[in-house]
Amino acid sequence: MYSEIKGKRHFPKGIVWVLMLLLLWGSLTGCGSGTDTSDTVAGSNIPGTADGSGISEGSQAREPEQPESENESAFPGSYTVPEGWVKAEQYSTVDKVFYVEEGHEEDDLPDNISIEIGTNRYAAEEHEQFRDAIVRQLLVQLQGVEAELTGDGTYTEQGYVVYIFTISGTDALTKQYYIVGDQQYCLIHLTGFSGSESTVQAAQDMADSFVWD
Image 1: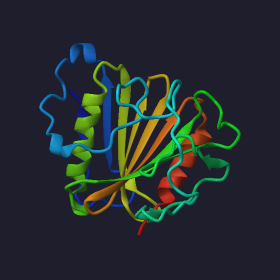
Image 2 (image 1 turned 60 degrees about the vertical axis):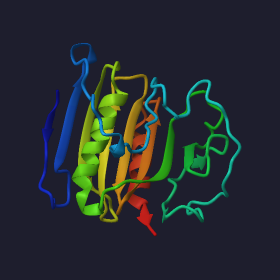
Image 3 (image 1 turned 120 degrees about the vertical axis):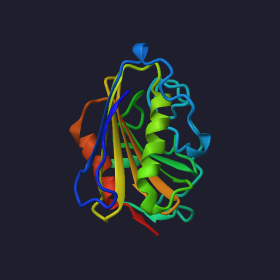
């Protein structure tokens, strides 16, 4: 169903793992069936999926539930918000913070970046198993969507393992940065409608700045 090139378990700095999927689901019915629900990781903001929670037309605004800070008291890490990006108060919650470019807060479909922390059953050194769980989930979520999925495994500037998944070929570009921790992860999720490279760079910069407490 897909080709996968795995790197070494203890891989050197740099991109060492690449996953490429051409999702033509009309001929791949049943792909992703039998997923172990215990492997479930964070839901995505993939446009057009039933459980997508990205900022999109018709999204329900929610009251802000946390203070204005890049290192929230309940958030087990810190990060830097790129210059020119501001917190989208109407969409952010205690568990998930959204950011948009300054001046685009009222756009119907602004480029947006969210950040959240999740837990899983994998130790940090079991990151390849965690990666595989993400792949299985993405296969299920993308059923019925014609798109291309690519994945890179590398390190952040802080030295953490990060898996980056890019979904293209839909109405929006989606990039997910899974920063690996010990039985936890940080997910930085970009949904880009404009095609701007600066939006992608902003998400990358946020991922590179993240530090576990």
